[in-house]
Amino acid sequence: MIRRGGLAWLFVGVALAQNLDYRQDMNWRAPESAAARANPLAGKSDFVAGGAKLFQRHCAECHGPTGTGLKKAANLTLPDVQTQTDGVLFWKMTNGNPVHGMPTFSRLPELQRWQLVLYLRTLKP
Amino acid sequence: MFRLLGLLIFLALLAAPLPAQESPYFVTYSHYLEEPGNLEVATSSTLGVPRAGDRFFIAPYMELEYGVTARWTTELYLEGQSTTGDSTIFTGWRWENRYRPLQREHRINPILYFEYESINEGSRIRKEIAGNAPEVGEPNSELRQTHAHELEAKLILSSTVHDWNLAENFIVEKNVSAGEGFEFGYAFGAYRPLASIASGRNCRFCRENFSAGAEFYGGLGSTNGFGLHNTAHYFAPVIAWQLSDNATFRFSPSLGLTHQSNPVLLRFGYSYEIRAFRDKVARLFGGRP
Image 1: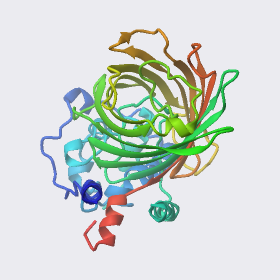
Image 2: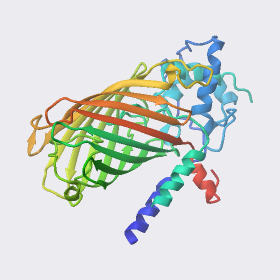
Image 3: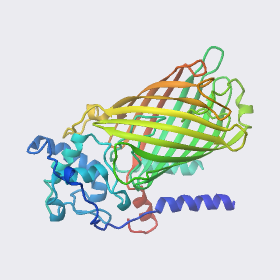
Image 4: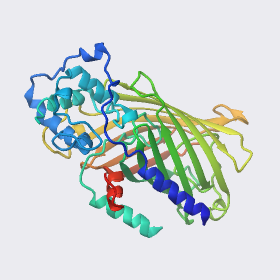
């Protein structure tokens, strides 16, 4: 009985672990070569709708449906984010920041990640 | 227990429709972990087509996969087995953990995998192939009497090359209930989504909802006899179809490559992703999500 109780508490503990509040990570910086990359879809507004769909699927849960941020993730409409280059945003999406709860999205095809960058540029505060 | 399972399934059906991005692999693991706070409920089955004189079996299993952090995924399995002309038995449970030691994406991304298995000899889900091929023919009533406590470790190496995932798994397994030595196995896989661009509309049959590839896996003997002698090996095309925003269906016909393999293992699975599961649980207990 004790062993079963212990196992149940272990699962509850695991389930509730790591409820982090968002804090900006000043050390999360893309290398210069990545920052300089241009979005191959830049200016192709046809692909924004696909980016919006991907955003709702993969990002809205933490960043909010309009990108204005929730407790655990950044407000993507702020100048701090919007002044970053397309290459930086792409790099951050690709690599994530696992220590601070941002998963990697390298499993998405490269062009879909660029579609997300395209959509991020349309977000307004 | 059945009430708990019923509750979980009910919660899964009620969950808001949000997407899953499932790999089509059944055996191979990639470096893509569950997103933190999400719970994936999956049910899969392995249908074994026997050689002449043996019997068909089907081994269903249920998975509860949870993203504890962005670097740690934990998973609980419950499994059973049914053999034609014999009986249906519960074959045990497994608890696996995958940990990502490196923070950034690299050309090759390692994942450390540890699993504890409390199963009996009737287990047939073939989630991994390690050691030598098991002898078949004993009835379930005898197989269920032989319990095994096994520890398993894997080194998962995985890469993203353009839109392809390439994954290599190296397996070592130890049955601590018996003096079988350490058993070894491998699994390799490659897959890619069938479309690189997401369309703006919601569609069920778009190419972007499908991913396809292949797995190649088998046993490598044990410390009592390392090598390919008396081992099972399989080649398996794999396909995944994202049925809805949060549900995925996977299918794989595995083809046995040696006399010790089943000629065919048909695998199929359905998974449902509950996004922000941790937040939902926290709200139930009055916590802030």
